[in-house]
Length: 217
Image (cartoon, rainbow, N blue to C red; front, side, top):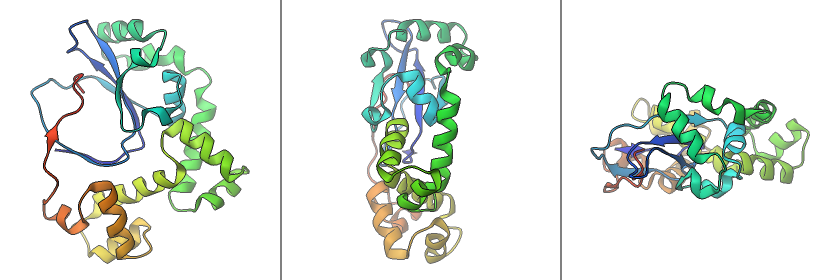
């Protein structure tokens, strides 16, 4: 199985811990992970928007990129209480996390606007459209999302390719995904996915590793 690169952060309720239910944070993935599925049951999880992630976790998300870490290790004061409340009401994470999201809507809207611009515009153009400096955009976006604006754009381009690969000639896929040319696609795809687009389409992917999410994610 494969986890594609993603700029998203997830909060997972682990019920496999000997000490009781525990919340585990899955930070943004800057590169693909290939893993062997295990027999652990699927765990309840919620995907946090960029504005929500920092509000709930109370740390800059840059500290979480490519990490799987218990919320308690981030010294969150309510880690145990949140885990127990979610365990008791597994279908209501929105209600349980709601009090921790106060004030997050404004930041979420700003980050969403930045992300939309960065999908197909250079950082300088996105910053100008938002009325901020490039430095402000890089610092604010990275702290909320966990990856830089430039790497975010790379992830989005590769994810678009993953949705189209095999359905059209690779040169057409490259152009539609926002790459300059086929060589640009090949270089970035290999950096993020570990193989070339052709190898991926043919099913020749890196050898799977044991799933790193040992907390039930």
